[in-house]
Length: 81
Image (cartoon, rainbow, N blue to C red):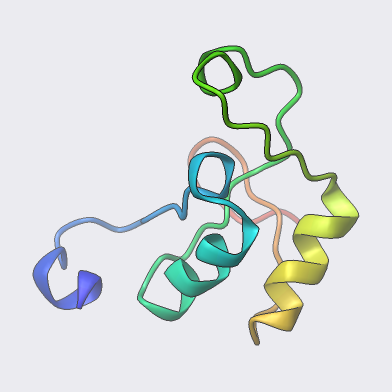
């Protein structure tokens, strides 16, 4: 539904940092096209009591387990090799 109602928004990121890895996977199924990235230093969410932490290998595995191929991108959403 997100792609139907938000068709003017090119990229939708799942929020595994605040909602957890499993919800991040579900968000991909519901139209998100960006799982997010490795958090180098995160103070705001952790101060609120959320402590989800994933490395690049774990993120790639979660994306594959959800049925998608992980890709790296830059800040302009251009895919990298």
